Image (cartoon, rainbow, N blue to C red):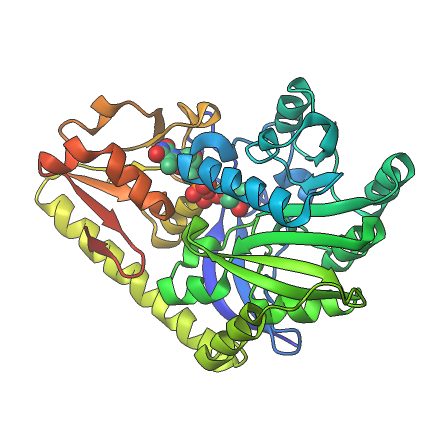
Length: 396
Ligand code: JHZ
């Protein structure tokens, strides 16, 4: 049974940055109710209102993984690890985006799967074999008929974006060799609770995984966790290493039982923990608004840094408009001169000078705080301050 624990109100689609400001309407189905629930049986956290993938992931998807050094560095490190530990003959990435990971592999070794045609075009142009398609059983069969089986399948921040998880894992199991490895990485729900990062919820994040839920999910498909790595990326992620349950050649590391017992100790098995999180989110909203209003009363200038999907949730949930945040800066070309979804706040192409005469910068991309602080040393030296809502609304 799925029990509701969080209601973030009516929200626009997070990655649909508007060409000009438009007041969106519930009637026209431009806004949808963002409510989140916990399945007491499977321990899986999911959205109630699921948007069809064709609406979310189209030919104009703006997000590019290569926009942050943190991510490109993390992918580079991972590619070295995969080659050393698994030495794949054939490597498949589901949700290859703009090729931030696969650029570290040989062209004849990689199959890319990417539903957004603007992104698939990028890896195709670079010479990587790319299927511009959604991950499902049809595609898995199509790949099987051409390549037979695959040694390593990898997917970061993608499987949680697909509604039919049963089909996702069936399609993966269909393609993996007997000794094949599946590696997935996604934000950790434990970290999400600890950091009170409710902005991990938006239409694309249909699910937020925990080790607890992944273990149960994959069991049905004859798959088994054998290692878990903790990552700092995207506000705290888990990288799950998965094998076939009947493959006894690979040892199960104690990282798996350790993570699961940590999650159980924290209460991720109990609905009461989720309800508590839901109540803390309401307080976080009030505290953030109080902070921003105090600053605005002093006529000080606030801008946003990183026009993230996450920020869309915060702005719309807390009702923060251009009366509080003058504009956002972002390095992504496709977000330039657009407006934050649902809010009349312009996104400007990042230039250092856009931080001149700014008193406070709200971190839309709080998950890249280290990278941003390094870049903005001058702003900090001149007395500029940052605002974050994670784990509690405050000035840093
Ligand atoms: P970032 C997206 O979420 C959507 P978002 C998606 N659903 C998902 O799961 C995650 O990514 C992985 C900019 N930036 O990664 C670039 C700067 O401008 O937190 C990006 O627009 N300057 C697929 O949007 C944004 O911030 C910088 O110095 O919440 C970061 O977006 C840096 C470091 C980033 O993901």
